Length: 585
View 1 (cartoon, rainbow, N blue to C red):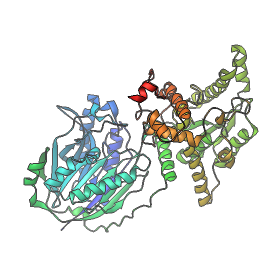
View 2: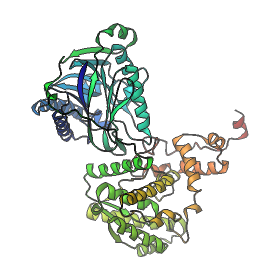
View 3: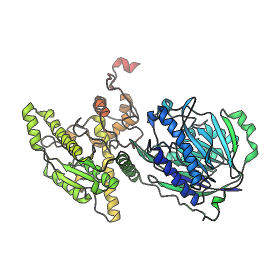
View 4: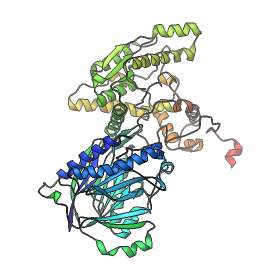
């Protein structure tokens, strides 16, 4: 029976920051070794950050990444980590092209490399565009046990490297991941890792990135599962973590080569590093990590949105954020998110009342500012709007949109003056049906709730207030902002319901049309009113040009607007009731 102390370094990497990521890797590896770890695993592409998109195609970047990997190997030895096996995700490059790879580092050098074999090309992933798949499948013998390495998508394929490792016989598999967050995805991941471990008949250590990159959020949720599929330890979501655990590994050695020859397509390469346990583990206490309690759906989404906003602000060098406060639910939720993400003193809210703004909207905005402690100012736009309307002779929708655009100019002016990042406060439902003003309320550098349906915005508001009450804190969101009927207040007595179906029904149709990609007939068959379906899909299709110009925002659903859903702007296809001839086909 061999025993290895395993460490999973769940860390937040920054795309392109090779030196910063390298220092983080060395620091975390040193910490793991000080806690007695003999094997330390880092996530997919941790040295470069992930996803790197077209940086993968830039030879200068790929060359620098591979060179930095060799530097990291030497730095690990200098930091006292030479005796440990450290597995690091990075960008490799050989004569065939760039590869999404893992380096296995020991005693100051890269002793083996593995390149991801299965490249995802769906949703937000374009890895066929960037990487060359690997064909070698290294198995290293370390501390008397055989260890295999795979990367992310490799375990999602039924006939992938894990099945070949099972046939070849390994004692432990390390899975390096850059798996973005989606609602309820941690349950899917956990079930998958458990199934693969059972197929292997050996433990699997799954380590994932945490933090955010542009629109993607990585939630961590790293885990170690034994050969029966039972979870031994798990990291919390949305925070950096070093998970350390002792694994008892009975070697299963001599059975395998003949079986593999009949089943596998990869080139199995075996490398022996050591038969004995590195002395670094001596004298350190045995770790006993506890599995964190699962988050509720609202808590999980809130954490994802806070993480996405916080990292976007920090990694892009912004000091402060700026948003308009209308007194409504959307801006209230975004403001509360901002305060949680960067602190109240770095959040600037602006109330911009027009001649149609109600007294409760103005007072609710001021109430929000007082509850959260953010920096608050009032900038009336009545005179600005009058100049545009009078000079251009505007009325109706044109006059309504001028109000939104005067607010946008106000926010962008303050942004230019003081360096704030302007936040758009629109939600996914509005974005879907085009219920926003381009160059108006759609203006900004980031849109925190861009992928949150309107009905879930209310759920988040209620959850956040309930959480504050549980902690004995001031409720951040004014109750009136939650309970009052939503309105853009761009004309007298305007309500959202004047222009849109009831939000619960609207969100249900949008979920089926956008997330489920269902057509007209499918939606009607599902029980939705035919005229309502035609109306909603017509609004969605007509708003594609607006969505293309909307700021980036944190992805939380299976199919966010952007890289998940790519439709042409110029497009005459429309979902509609079929003609009698079409119905007979």
